[in-house]
Image 1: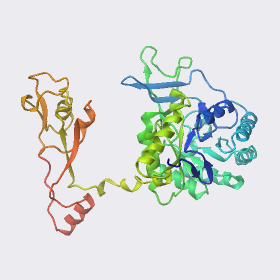
Image 2: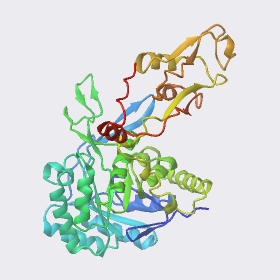
Image 3: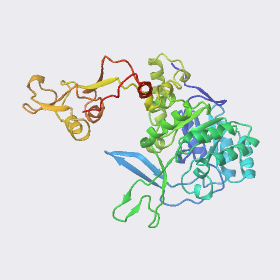
Image 4: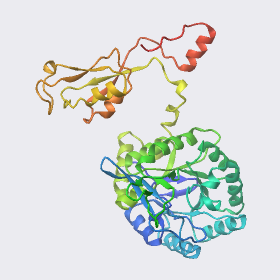
Length: 436
């Protein structure tokens, strides 16, 4: 069985799955429950000066019947005293010495950063996560994403922290920025040991069309909040890759954003993550989801002949580059398995109205009757010469593997846009004709 243990910037953990800083990591009671369920670590709900929260605090986006496809919150950092939080961290570490506990911090002045950093170490925390990402409430007080969006300010504050830090320091980055790499580089310059990303995305999930007030509703008003859950995963993967691929960053990464299954976890690791933080999925399904995530990830590694997560980490990073590096002469076409086709013809509609008009409706007789097809009703047929391989038909098809994208030999050597421009400039080729 593959080894799921990790060493994250010197912090050892029995597995990569950590409860992210948020409502599920607010108390010692929750940390105990998480570790009993099998989580490798807990990043404590952010500790700072106690705040006052509002009621209500959450809203969500439902898509196609899927609850919490996207989740929004306007809840702030811990509303409990620093004394209580640090005491409970000490309690948890005493009971679970081999599990990871990270203190998430957010304060304002240099002196307060020094104080909270020392208190984190004194209570036995394994590391510190600096919350530079909160996009609501705290940023209005000059903290959270107000820091993470300004690399110079972030570098200064990380520098303050490093003056007092005796345990590893992780900088949590905001996605509410033009290029997250600049903030990651700033963390590196200031001496941070690792980065975590992404924090939540500034959002309004919906508007109640009866009250005309967005949710969550607070006495007739609302506010922008932090967006998370499955819907943010593609954005998180992109930003994790950007940091993993940048040679100036070179820091261990704790991946966050829409992780809820072992497949999500494997994708984050393949793009460079070492530890994996989960919040929204826990709020939806509870702590026991980690059982399936550990079993599934371990089985996947075994199936690939990988002994540990280190064998998977970063393996997908080199395959992602700039568009200009892609092969202009590579081609795939859509092919339909008529034994699986149900005759819904969604592929035809999507191609006709939203893509390249290369799927015709033809007599079904030569193709037999697939599951659910009606005799005499036309079936879709791809004109392969006109297919540009856009993938849309395979995406909208409701039947798994009914439409597959199949590579075809164009008889032309690989050529990128960069190659094309270079050859045009050198006069060694003519401009490519436009698509008819």
